[in-house]
Image 1 (tube, one colour):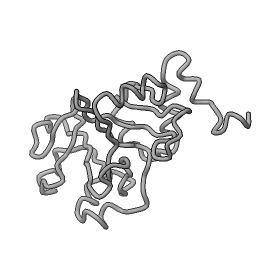
Image 2 (cartoon, helix red, strand yellow; image 1 turned 90 degrees about the vertical axis):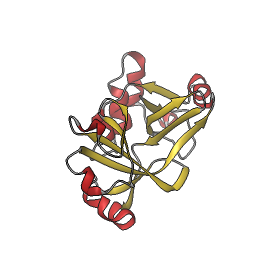
Image 3 (cartoon, rainbow, N blue to C red; image 1 turned 180 degrees about the horizontal axis):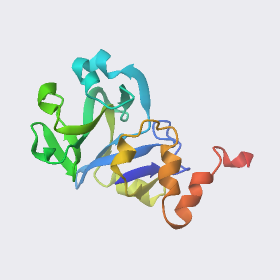
Image 4 (tube, helix red, strand yellow; image 1 turned 180 degrees about the vertical axis):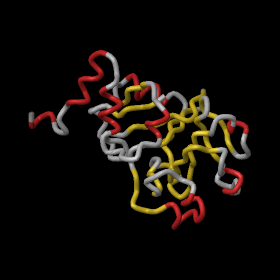
Length: 178
């Protein structure tokens, strides 16, 4: 599932953001922001992981929590779901343990992106924010996670939604100027 920030969500960490939910349970939720690439190359921070990640080979700002840590989201190669260090989230999409030697990853992972930090919500917090209209929960696709140019990701995901939700894709950045 993806979370799309609604036009009413003005928190600068999440304006126009697309969040991939990685874990949701009774204790809360955790995800990463997909459309916030940084200018920092992965290789400068995580060495040889820079040779394994998808283009652009930069860290993505996964969210405001634990920005000094990193989460790796991977698409396992067919049959690679049981690879060392891989934990499935859904189908072949999952988390990859960055303590895994890169030589064990080559061939088991088709795509990889690394996020500095994450977005997190306590018990019931995300549900409350969805109910108040801060987020739209929508189905996602693997290609949303590994998109080369993420600038229009929010609009493109919104555009493919059914009914009135798709109308938000054409809203101006500042509706008062319309």
